[in-house]
Amino acid sequence: MKIKSKAAVTTMAAKKTDSAAKGAAKAAKKAPAKAAERRVTFTVRAEAGKAVYLAGCFNQWNPTGKKMTDKKKDGVYSTTIKLAPGTYEYKFVIDGVWCADPENQDFVKNDCGTLNSVITVK
Image (cartoon, rainbow, N blue to C red):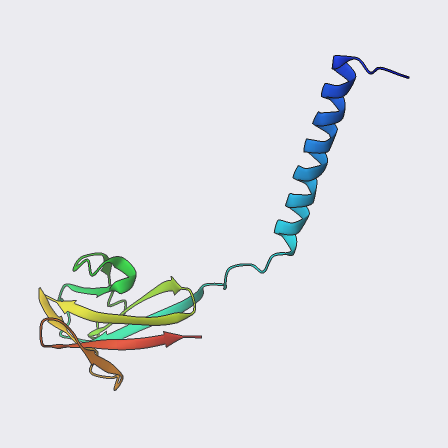
């Protein structure tokens, strides 16, 4: 009968652990990736010179979380954000006033009794 030393047993256990880790890494590579985020552009018309922001469930309704810009100084404000596929509620905040998107006919009533615009990213 052959007796293995403690060191040999430890080395064998380390090899088994290393092999298991490699197998888990391979399985992780085969697992489906999270849905890719999409670039989504939001646009709203307002008077030139206004402070315009985008707020929604994607930024915890932060009223100054995402500033929109009027690059051409013509009153058309826009911003682009990355969103994973899903449905999102949002509003524009123009000089501190919360506004639903006038160009979007998809909306839901919120807890404040006003409307939130809704966008679905596919």
